[in-house]
Image (cartoon, rainbow, N blue to C red; front, top):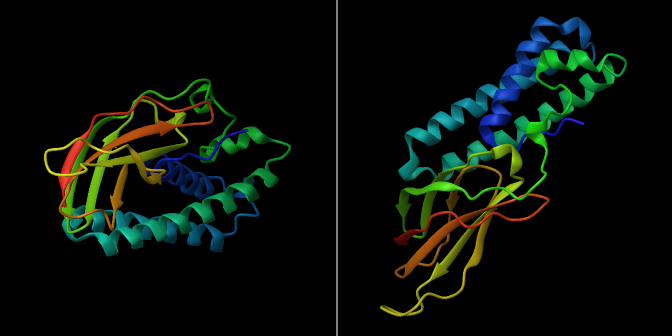
Length: 208
């Protein structure tokens, strides 16, 4: 069975394929009505707009990030609803799902082993108690989610405390709020799937 993607870019790519497929092959998916397609297109347009707004305002993006995440959740819900209806329509001809990018599961979606370590973690913006990150990953389809870990220097010039989980995310970007202020912090990313966890990626430091 095809698995729903777990990164923003893969979700948006699938959505584009779905919209194009429903538009071109609508007769194959009668349960996905013009109104349902319009809802999907509207949710995609809202998400694209929110992503653009977030990119332009990263240093003051707390509100934009919340809005984008809400739009993404709505988009995912509507995409999954449309896919469920399409699967019912194509129960006898599942190959038709390829028109909307939802074919049989391929090797790329399998999770035969723990993911490799994330790379290129960097801080894109900072604020009082807020911090924004992006990172990269060689095979995103083999990742269920990413764990953002943080550790804190116990006192100036001393050793750092243990690594703790700061947040879990489905995307290769994150915005953390209410972080410790005025102390030396270090962050790293660990990828995880059903098989296990990757080695930690590179470490970045910050004082917020």
